[in-house]
Image (cartoon, rainbow, N blue to C red; front, side, top):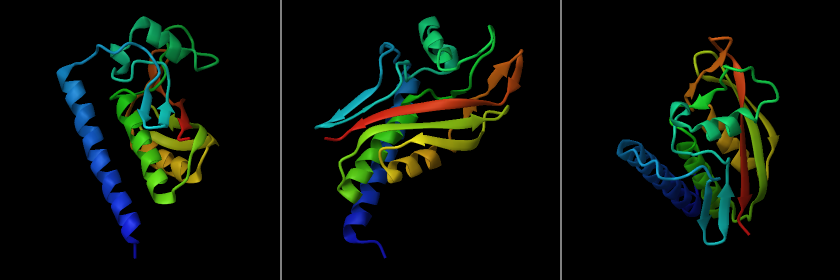
Length: 178
């Protein structure tokens, strides 16, 4: 049986998820692309999350040449003309989920969380996540939620030699809830 506090936290988390998806959907429908390529920094009071320095609202096809260069630089070797996998809906929806994960852990566990979450997802040639691997985490609950959510992300598949291929995609989030 869940405690009243845990039920309230779960309820807040689910409401937040719904709002997140509605906001992301509204932004993608309105075509709002006014944001430039800066790290996503979400700040709530003294809580902040920073992610990659790529326009979070764009699909791979919508990324500027500069954003694509930043993205490609995350791989040691990627041949000219090849493309890495990339979330079909851009980074914004998953970044919002990570913000809500942090809030839910703060509410449920009453813990301050600071540090980096770094993990990889392996994306197959059809754009599905087939494996996740955790490199660093500031909190076990955050990483468990992140890895679970990451498995549901649909990706544009990587392209190797002109054909869809299997490749890893890195995620890196910096949390500061102090």
